[in-house]
Length: 192
Image (cartoon, rainbow, N blue to C red; front, side):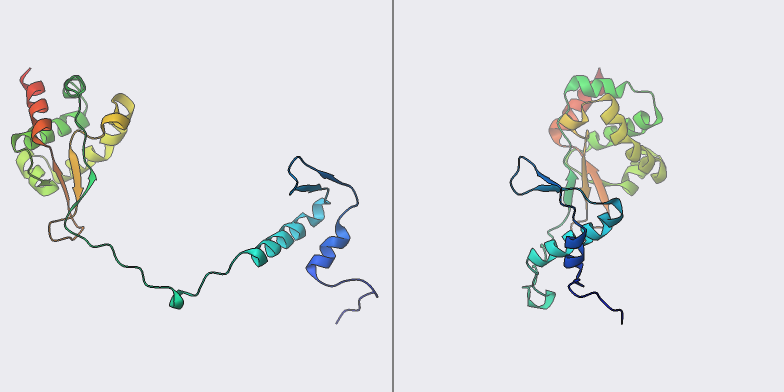
């Protein structure tokens, strides 16, 4: 046990108080006081302030005393992205794209527009377009970046709806669809 000098405090608060220099200034805010602190003592002051702040915060109730949260009921698939009604001129511009992503998504839109309202899984889209599933996944992965860079993504979103989940409520599948109105716009562009 170390010996303390008479009158020298041993708590962290008292030690910090001993280290505070006499020169202080106030700011425009009445609840803030600027204090010059030697660099060596900054970690101690920060720790002290954290302890004081922790003492003032209310302690949350233990988990066992909290009422249980009700799980949100699942009622089938959830649209992750509803897809917007793209203006015809934006669809026309997209349909003229030459990249691999453009070509893949154009084939997907052709398939979706041929059967509006029907949700196609990736496997079904791969079969309908004759493209490998991996190619579709790759195109969809780059699509948002492409749309943000060259189209009004923030305003119109995707040119189709992206839905996560199956009718039984399990989240293990992703489907894509277009509405009748979206399909009509796309078919109009493709007929030009």
